[in-house]
Image 1 (cartoon, rainbow, N blue to C red):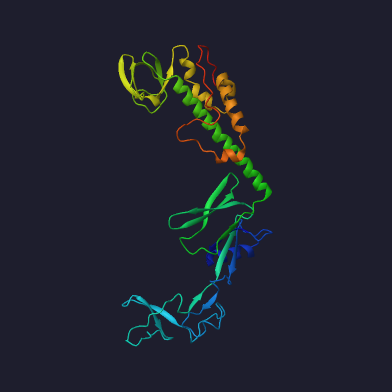
Image 2: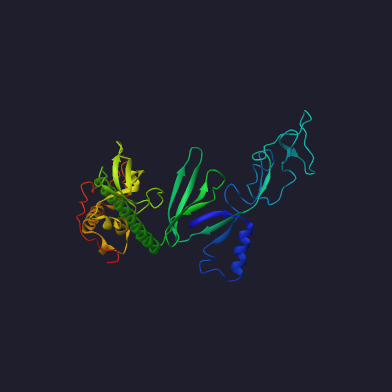
Length: 343
């Protein structure tokens, strides 16, 4: 049944106009949606709902009368008393023994007229799953639907208001489920590859931490004193290792460790291109062999883990490394000519 949500009468009339114009498909959908008029929803039947004080409360079911009868109990809000009070057919207040307007609960004791519900059905054949988000006071009910490029999750019902008629039922077609599985696989592979590259960078930085007398280059293009591409000689390193003193053409500056990368005079031209090479989707031939070996080994180990286990696994808070890749070590770059990314 896909997703069903309450809508208004204007949407219902617009849908009927589109159907009359021949815009509906063989399933009766207009732009993937169908609107219906529901008059017999339990608890919201169209017609009169007789209250407990009415003579018809036990003899006539809800919705049996379409209009109010002379025996119906009517109410209106009394501003001076600040409560709902009973009125007669002429709209005059019905007074109690003390001469005050008779207090009546308009929800349970008085009669009231209810209109029909208008239900809109959408996302037919696209619903993949449903869920629930439990809060401290209320709960929201969610549904995940396929939008052609990925999954779209939204709230279709909530305990924050009266949404009992709303519903959602998984009804995705085999083609949609196949497309969703392929999208999920590609997304997981992209996330894992991103984590591996980040681990590779962190490992390289850790093994090439700047020490006094070494050369470093800036990697942060937004740094004011030591921008990306500028070289300098390390004069001192703080005890915690977070700050580094650098000499650039005789002038001295201090930088955060995260803005720097270690280089030497033999391999500085290659390190300039290291991060771009690692993140280049099409330049695999320009990657150093040691990077290719590590990435291939990480991907092999991750692919060997069953899919449910990969979905349940979360990175430990104490270690940023991926499981199965802790033992991998990035070798020190040997002085050699560095291939360009277009090679």
